[in-house]
Amino acid sequence: MIGDHQKPRLLVATGNPGKAQEIRALLTGLEVEILTLADLEGLWRTETLGGLPASQDDQEISERFERLERAMAETADTFAGNAAIKARGARNITGLPALADDSGLVVDALGGAPGVYSARYAGGHGDDEANNRLLLTNLEGVPEARRTARFVAALVLALPDGGEFTAEGACEGRIGWAPKGEGGFGYDPLFILAGDGRTTAELPREEKNRISHRGKALQAMAPALRRIFAKKA
Image (cartoon, rainbow, N blue to C red; front, side, top):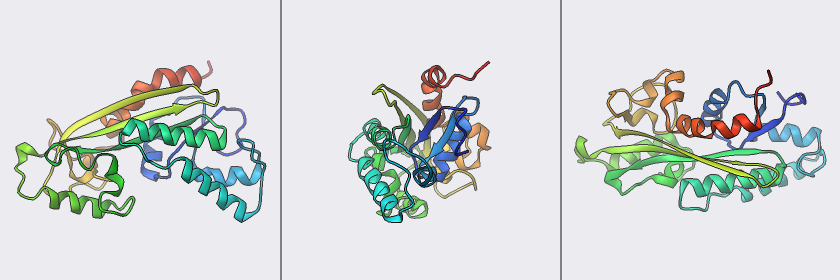
């Protein structure tokens, strides 16, 4: 909740509501006010943030978001590289501790594609349906034994004092022949868990959070997060 000054703040530097929901759930228990990029307009209009004074000017707010977008542009060729760019950019613009992830799907039969281009595989950023259609098209004729794949996530926490922490996680599986399940987002309806038979879109949210690539990365990041945002006794 914006304005809860009893807690330190952590900016989860994503505009993806699915990712934000997962990360919020996985950070439950920390003594921290969790913000996302969607909260920034309200903050910029009501208080000084990152040295930028409060402003009710729509053009000024728009320019701040443009600066943030440039600072967070994903120009690296690795998940960890992109996560670092986003975390540092968000930290530098807002002055807040920033946690950013870059994640995606790595398909062995496609030479690692879509990889860092997972969100924009079909051209438009975040068009899940188009991305899934293209993935199935590119895997036409590939037998089940060669449809192995994994979700990979990298997390970077960038602190105002310049400190940084990095963690990674992976979830093994294979690509199915058609979408299954109503949950999750992205490639979840096509990704069948190794040794399970269900897609990640068929998992209850709590189970997915526990075994997902992002969940594993957050578990690896947990010691640093607990030290910085330890729950008060």
